[in-house]
Length: 216
Ligand code: DX5
Ligand code: ZN
Image (tube, rainbow, N blue to C red; front, side, top):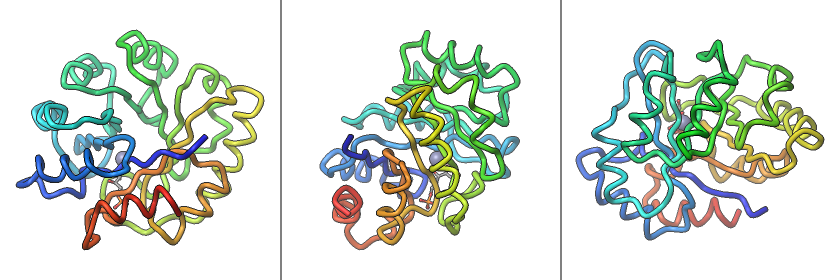
C-alpha cells in the first residue's frame, strides 16, 4: 500500500489551530494525528474533548486519536463523540486489552494498540488478529520534538514478521522523531503510517514538508 502521513497537531500553534488544520486539509496528509496526554500515563498534559471537537469541526481528514492515558475505557465514547475516527490505546495502560479493542470497534472506530519503546512486539501475538493498527512508539510518549530511538527498526521488522501470518492487512504506524532523514528506512522496515509533529510544523513550509514525507 501507499504509506499514509499523519501530521500531529501537538506541534501546531494552538492560537491558530484552525489555520493549521486548514493547512493539513490542503496538504497531501492523509490523517490528523491527535495526541491525548493525561499527566498520569505520561508526565505531560496536552488537551481534551473541546479541542478534539474543535479540530473535528474544521478537519476534512480522519482524526487518528492517540490515547496516552490510564483507563482509556472510561473515555472511548466521549472521544468518539468528539470526532475520533480511529483510536489507539497503549498496551501498557490496558489490563483487559481485548475488551478495550472490542469496545473501540463497537463504536465504529478503527482500533489500534501502541507499544512503548521497551514493550516487545511479541506480546501482541494473541491480539494482533483483532487489530486494525499497531503504533510503534519511536520515542518515549509524552513530548514532541524528541530524538528518534534506533531500536524502532528492529521492532518494525518483528511486527512485519508477526503480521505476515496473523494480520497481513495491518496498519503499522510509527510515532516520534519522524523526518525526512529516517522515513525511507522506516518504510523499508515495514511502517505504512507515519506521524510527524515537529518536522512538519517547525518547517518553513509545513505543506511542503508533508509532501516531502509523502514522496520521500
Ligand atoms: C509523542 C506523541 C507524538 C508527537 C510526535 O508522545 O505521541 O505524536 O506529537 O512529535 P514529533 O514528531 O515532534 O516527535
Ligand atoms: Zn502520538
